[in-house]
Image (cartoon, rainbow, N blue to C red; front, side, top):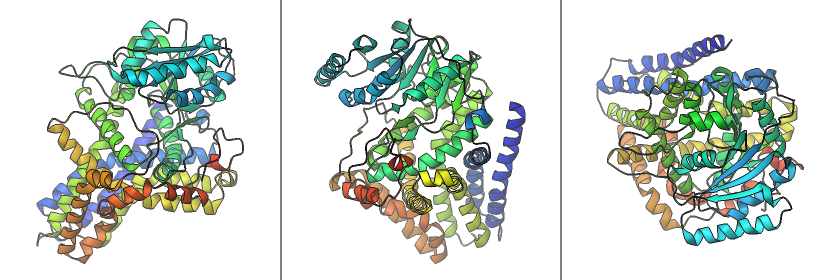
Length: 554
């Protein structure tokens, strides 16, 4: 069954990739080939399979969601109903966080889960004594206010060796003896008790499975940047996650939180190796999933939406900083691909994670080569086939969001839950424009960041800023002036080559040119409030009276 799924998926992927590459071959070969055109085709062919996985997976997920209605049963097995008898630790990893806010999000879990089977563990990596003191005070106040204080535990490490993965593994070695399962949460995670119970039941019913990752949705926000970003991600992940759950099956992903794991195999087989030179792995989750599969255990994805949320960075500068940290972690996977710890699909997972960021410098090089070709007298490109190939690849890249939104639009019940067709359409258009501007900014940031890493820049896991605040103009200028300079230089270069090349690439270069005002506007609370009042990029929770989140203050 799994082999048949993967064969069908591979054929679909090949078909998805062949069409735009054939068009691009036709366009670039028009009038003969230049060196620039040959390099462009080679680089685009390198990344097209990754873009194709976005489209093929999302198309599969769209079909399942549109016709099967139960993505868990369609991709794995029906939801288990027999009560689980084991004990579960809910582990929240924190570092330099507002612990009172973290505990406020955890309190409904304790209230809604059986006291004899669920305990809360706060695993702190906070090193600064000035931050540790209020953390201790928040924990003491929380425990003092609960009649079940005995099920609330707090442990702070003396060092943060191994970062979050080391924090979790130390807990599993030293404190997890009484427990069978662990729910992994981040500081900004929110999960419903019913969701956790369902995940634990499912894991308990399948002893061959070591970890079940659930779909993670964004929490409602009245801040412009996360509001626009998460609207598209919400729709995209629904279709994409269902698709990858279908073809990856027991070789599923782990995203590091909002997941339930079986303690003993994770403790025994997910110990992270050190990199050459003794460096620690930054992005641990996909490596741990691949190691569990290498040890013979399954890793499953529950693609059903609901009961599992997180927050996104509050502004573009925080978002780009997080991107660079993730990129540094994913690029470390190059050193792991040949290790005997992984099966073939584990290596595929790591390769896809690398390509997520390697795509950026490849696309940046394609733009530079296209600029050189536009100024080469021998460069002659078929305009119609070239433009169609360009936008075909672009729409494949955006297909998870577009197909996810289409699935909502075609379902009357879902469409109403998202505020109706007009509200949904406004959100899709606003997010598309937002991402069209953001994408090239990210490409430049990744490309320059990758060069800096090759030159020796060190990247670690710094605490994330979670609270929204308007970005000062000088901060935006200092952070983004070089994005703007690169964007203006590219636009000027294509303009000098003629109006046709400029029109061709202009939609993909506008973002860097306006990066500074774009950053300022999307961090302005007035813009976010305006979007929220007009229900632009509204999530379904904003229309649900039973939502666990309070109404947005706008």
